[in-house]
Amino acid sequence: MNVIGKRAGRWMSAAALLAVAISPTVEAEYDEAAQTATARLSEEVRFRGANDRVMLAGTLSRPAYIARDMPVPAVVLIHGSGPNDRDETLYGHKPFAMLAAAFESAGYAVLRYDKRGVGESGGSRQGSTVVDFAADAEAAFSYLKRRRDIDSLRIGLLGHSEGGMVAPMIAARRNDVAWLVLLAPPTVNGREISRYQNNQGALDRGATAVEAEAAADEASRLFDIVMADQLAAQRDERLLAALHALAARRRMSEAVVQAQRESLSSDWFRHILAYDPAPALRQVHTPTLVLFAALDHQIAPSQNEAPARAALEHNPAAEVRVLPGVNHLFLRSNWGAVAEYPRIATGLAPVLLDTLADWLDRVEDRLPTYTAQR
Image (cartoon, rainbow, N blue to C red; front, side, top):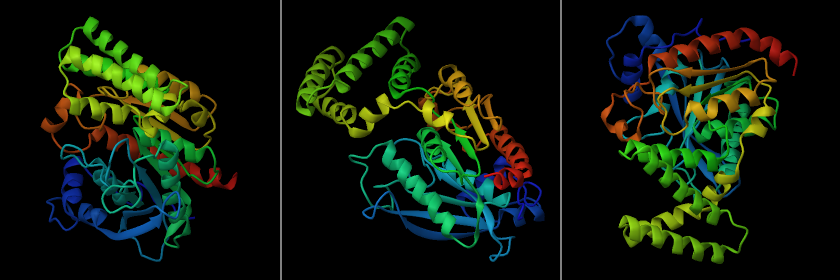
């Protein structure tokens, strides 16, 4: 059995990860062992997604210090919502590039890919729902299973935000996912999440508590229209009327109204409003680490931690934690609001990297017994 983890490699410091994520050939100023651990081999790959019409493009990287003919454990990185590329680039931050560097330094191969309709991947996001994105992520997992240089019994899934809903959907329907890491996963339905986000977003923009609650109520009325059991044309007519009424009070332009109409009436949003992640989590029996960010203004621990614990209470190999001082991207933060993202330092928080290193090392110790029982 090939056991590779913190014992074989070394999880790098945040500064070292930043250097290697920016450029795989950078001459970083850290010791020789660190340079060896961060040397990696990268391969541009393509694989079919949910169906033959979707060809996904990504990067498969593995540590160079391990012989090419030795199968290594692997992880698929699954993005959050929106048009994410393989690095999950947002406001100059590239959290997936840094996560990849961390896993590579510890002996893992990493597959990260552009979401359908983004970057070099084919297909279209229009008309797609979380179900489609889960099928794409499962296709990435199956692609790794077919490769001879990957240990097929040691492939895990790491999902961030929406990806934290997607990963359990896959693990719930197959028994060969070695482990799950869920970073800031929604654990209640999308309607509750969206109401919270509207309330918190208003507070972040300077609204009073009363004003923020009113904004959340307005959003909920729009959700009622979106979810109404009506013909699409009837829903659209009602939604447009409600948005125009809202625009008159808030002085919103027609362009903003139309953009809101398109977003709210999309297949993705209608599905996410109704989707409850808890049933899939309850079907997960693989080792699972759920991490929430204490300063997350999008997937708040106050709303999601307790449901996560309840859904996973049957799973003795599951852990749920809240990490201090970090935001939704697991960057060190003072406040947590989205408006802060462009102004804070790039680099995953050391508390995240240390937590992952410790947990994965313990999972590696247990995994041979676990796989033998499957």
